[in-house]
Length: 65
Image (cartoon, rainbow, N blue to C red; front, side, top):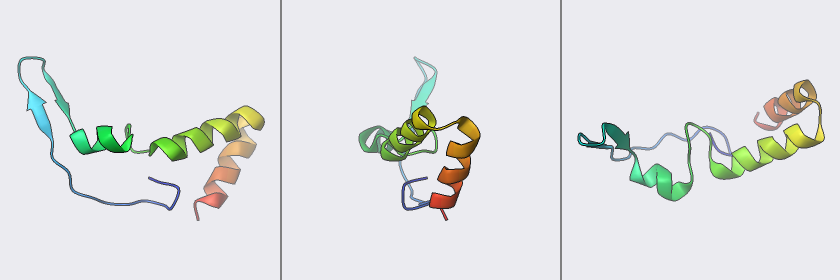
């Protein structure tokens, strides 16, 4: 999910059997952790810091429409 909404994209997944973990290099390059872009995460944190949680969540939901 980005500031512009949900974007679907294909990317390569690599698994390291020695370390027992996988990774998505493109996600790392774009700053995507989980399903939220880095810029959206920063904005969510800012809203959460400035407003009560419920108000921030409602505002973020409205902004994403």
